Image (tube, rainbow, N blue to C red; front, side, top):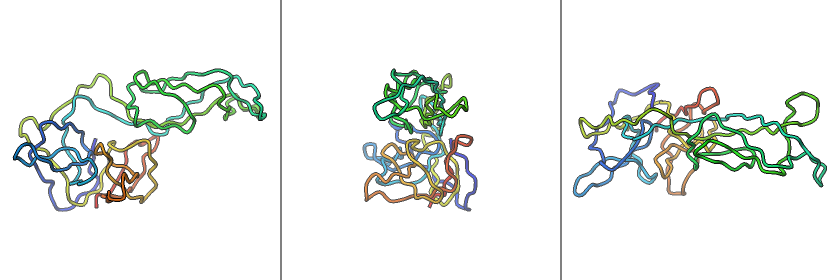
Length: 229
């Protein structure tokens, strides 16, 4: 998804599309070659060109940001005097078909990506008082991840023209094409990941910032707002 909030007077550019590339609006573009022809595909972070405003994919993805799970647990006291769960506990995320590399959690859990099921391991400390009794009776887990949207087939908006639209001038926009396993403080510099996603992580010292965060993603508004520099 790409939503333009504010744009300059410059129009986006159009480039011949890399026939082997797949992408969604909001990913970052990069020029490459196909034989003797210069074409445009998805950036690997080393030579970003601009923001893609077309789609060429077999499946769409979306994000869950700071999803909270309250998992009831019966605690036992461990050797440190802490209440912990004596057994593994499973819980379902709101969405299955999780992109495994995108998953992050504030509590150590294991993930079954296809089914969207997490397992809190035995020995995990109870950290939440759901009943309000003053004694922890649950484990509160906060997760973020990208997932494949079910029952919506992919699309190819470049099929008719063989060209892809790329914003290269300064814009302010919102997208769901960012790394959910990173945090996005206001005004933080944004780089390009190896998969062409915006990220606050600098992959290497040679990767330059291409944007700044103008509004972080939240549980209620899961898009990242940014200003392209």
